[in-house]
Length: 303
Image (cartoon, rainbow, N blue to C red; front, side, top):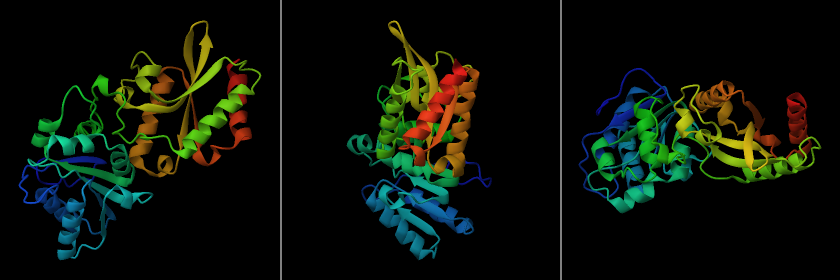
């Protein structure tokens, strides 16, 4: 859509703000006016606005204050750590003045993109200027922001180009947290101490779905863009085979509709390939006996 919001609350919405005039670096007045208009029309919602640039944040806050829209929280990525809103508006602030250097920093800012897509309870709205986004995007380079825009524009139905299988723009965890590292250690330790495994198994983390399975049997768009948290492989001669997928789930996997929809797609992909997928709540990441029990039950059933 161009410069106006649809009335229906679809979970993913892209706004092409065609007016990219600006007098200040890293600001997009056209996006700001769209944000103000949306906030004024949805006072019953808790709304968060996330933007990469301090100048844009300050300009948005000024306009919101002028309009008396105090139900809207606005900030850069760090202001939204652990916070959730009914609606998140992601203001990219890309204009004709945005240079390649600035875009190079922005396009793979994984923490920013992950926070933007994981804080929305009901709806994620991305605002950008398509013409300038296309100008700055380079086909041969990894570009998480561009992937995110294409995904949102098609309401989750787009396919990310194969060379970008490492993209984290769709809300996949962009970096290894201490919890994930602890879980990996626990998982490897448990595998080493299960007699049934006989040291034939190894674990890899953040594995692209398309690297685990050869064919997209479920016809899912996530086949080309998604990653599994952990994959257990069995070694046989000189080859290894995936035998088990494990997902480490935080709060957002039970409360965020966008994340939950992605989880369902992963489950469908695994079912189509007769692959076991086990979900572990992240509070159990360091509980060795619990993890060992899960693995023992799996291996016993698989015998």
